Image (tube, rainbow, N blue to C red):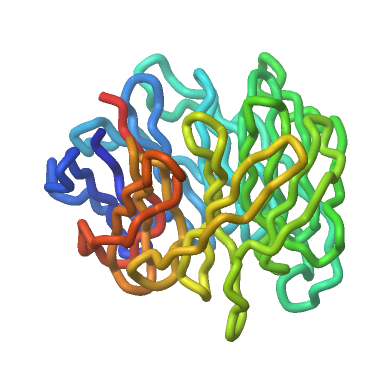
Length: 318
């Protein structure tokens, strides 16, 4: 499956199944995260002070650019004819309507988070880090507030606040979440180097260290993802520069193994076929880790792409 590589190097790139370039890079400001719409349109945030989101055709032709209403947008998600963006620096969530051709129409709402938590360096205010759309619901993970904010998306595209889940313990700094088919929710906590398990109603069940090897310095988990069968959870560790594999069991998460990503600062990864594809931001590489068919544990990494400051790997179903 082709992939898009987002980056902090003012360009994103498209590669085929063999990790060969499919087209020249598309130049746009700080496309740190991307999403692909149903029409194959590419959406890229501009993670800059005056945040923006842009739309591009498959060929890289622009389909419009709009301000996100906040600073440092770091995540974007598509759901039908709606687009959602998390503004990290200013702690807000923006909603957009899309045109029939997939281009950007207008911003329909901007929900500003308010709050802080116990870490004075990282939690002095709200920092929305991820948006996940499920049906008419939108869940926003906010590292600065130690919270997951739940919204209902109205037919008009407004964000109706339903409730806020405060994560425990305070200071965890939630970054990203993923939903398991059985309803449980797993959350990567950046500031405490942990992964938490919640019920479908967001009641805390368990918290585990995100790595098996004791970090020498700081370790900041980034992305997490489930295997297609839901039996394994993978968590990336920036600091240890590893992927930790957990078995997903009825009683909780069981750590299995921790392997190197073959580079430094694994900011993002995806499960791609029978492998993990990892963006190693600080080593300017993208690596592939084949998964053992029986254990689901990643094998040693091999670098497949050299790319400046890669920050996201996004599969493209053409």
